Length: 288
Ligand code: NAP
Image (cartoon, rainbow, N blue to C red; front, side):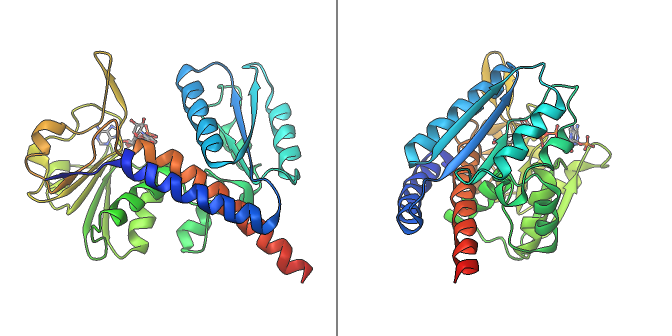
């Protein structure tokens, strides 16, 4: 059994991205800018935002941080996004979720210009992914595929089972695996006999958000197990998978922490550089 070291891979990717960012800036002569918007005082969100800003610093990306009051109206938030959409110094816009209840998340997210949607959450980017067109991919699913590729784990032809069908993990991941010629099954709260299905998985991904959800009896010998879950138990961070027992059965497994989590921020940085490159390439093409 091999532990998939997401921390190590993400550090390697960050070094690669630092070089890529330097080359892109040299070519187009402008800074790469990421706008990060945080509404309210959610502690977990504050930590995520801090980590994203520090990743920008490490890579030479200019982050512009907007800490907004919990009481901000949807109209005010949308007006900020409108300004950032036409701001030449900004290549990517990130709105940290969740938003307060009085704000309709979908309206805010879909206001982001798709070309600056570095989280890959807008309808346009989701549609491009569904049709297999070039898109800015949601960061966690993109990070999972990247991890599998870096470990040379064959996706084509594999039976993949994904637990969870959220818009940010399960559904986009379904399409990414499908594009890579896997046979994909997705399970949710209405799925019957989940164990029968997980036992068919060559690659099993759990994105449920429940500690101990996946146990060794649900995993085929030699499977690859990817744990996306983030759960808190007795002051400890754990995934959805019972790591100690499942690791005895599988060929590869991601730990929590140190598996999928670090890849998400690395992929956000990758999307920001990609958005910058595409925008400036388009400008050059238009001017030539
Ligand atoms: P979510 O929106 O809450 O979706 C959870 C999914 O799991 C839903 O599709 C739900 O089914 C399914 N589910 C819940 N209980 C189930 C059960 N008993 N049996 C079968 N299916 C069940 O969560 P999410 O945003 O996708 O996140 C999932 C987990 O990944 C969370 O722990 C989250 O913190 C973590 N996460 C980690 C990262 C990272 O970077 N590491 C990124 C994103 C999320 P229904 O659709 O039927 O309700």
